[in-house]
Length: 503
Image 1 (cartoon, one colour):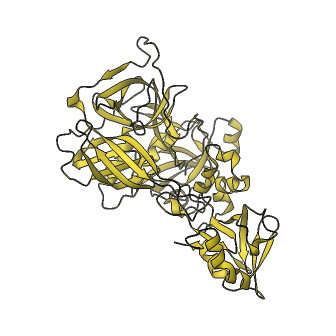
Image 2 (image 1 turned 135 degrees about the vertical axis):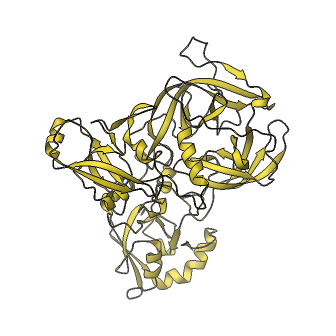
Image 3 (image 1 turned 90 degrees about the vertical axis):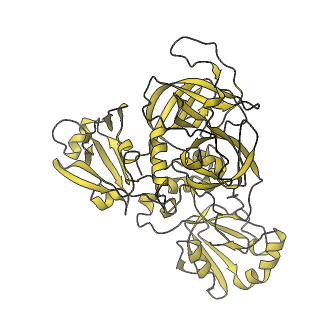
């Protein structure tokens, strides 16, 4: 995982609201909407019905939702959309804009970190007659891109915007940084605006990532990220984007460079953390090293390198879009003033390998209910239940554990089990106000997962189940016989489909 650098935008999700178009202004301002000729249509409508899992009440799902978007038609009879669109989907449907003809679709590949997904129609002939979009890989600052949207009549409308910045930002999954186009654009809401293709000379330049209607700033997933995704999707097993596994800080401060023992001209980034069992750790990178070059690209004290297309941009681009899992990447470092070369064997870290998973999508959350005490494994998906401001509104001890999980749990290979709430019952009298506790032991046995908890409760101590927690009250006791006797009534009273889900 790369350095966490704050990225603040008014809306973290993809949100569009009705907007009026500003008065046209010459050259630098986005252009007005224009109707695109029908022969240029390479899009289909995508209709999605789904249900998200409820992490506050993990035994149930939320109410069904419907989303409507546009998909970019690609070669090999596939359709590209954002992964956000198909997350927790129950049914996906494709619709021809010009005729209204429909067919079901399956999700072939979904990468929630890069926020991209490939769909395939059930009817293999459904996309016949639609020209696949090619990728525009040469977009630079100052280019104009057109956002394509459909009117209710099926007419295709393009709204021009100006590329103002190309930089590295965090995507919705908030795991690492990816290349992003930032575009100044005046765009109106339409019912297919969940996924919006951006084109350059009738080639796909990107997909809408997020849009702030107040500032009229759009962030787009760029074609180079899409190209990386598509190439990897051609393999039998999609492997995802590489993950280096170290944090860093700029070396602009001369005192920091002196402290690190750097010699020669100011350059590179100071390594602040190295996660265990990652490419960086396996290569021998250490805290205190200064990374001065990646793949023969010199890094300046701000952490940037000179890209032949984009100019100065953060070096993390070299470790995501420019390499694939299985590739090797040489890096040059200084360690206490001594020049060294290390080789990163690039790999992807699955979200499930994290102690506190950064996202959990398309999978039911695990839980265990014991006499009314609800236990879960901590995940960022659970913390996101507090809304867009979850960093401030969610239980702060849990936010802290998520933010510093590498330092708090360097051994990895475990989960953080928490007592999230109490369902009022005979067994929980006196425990009604207890919530948000970190479980350490059950019946004197260490708990590193819900599976550990489930095994430990089978061995009561003198007829009682003892729950130990990091926070007050430190210890909770339940009568094991009463818990067993009232489990059926508890399940019926709260309409619980089951008292546990461990898989």
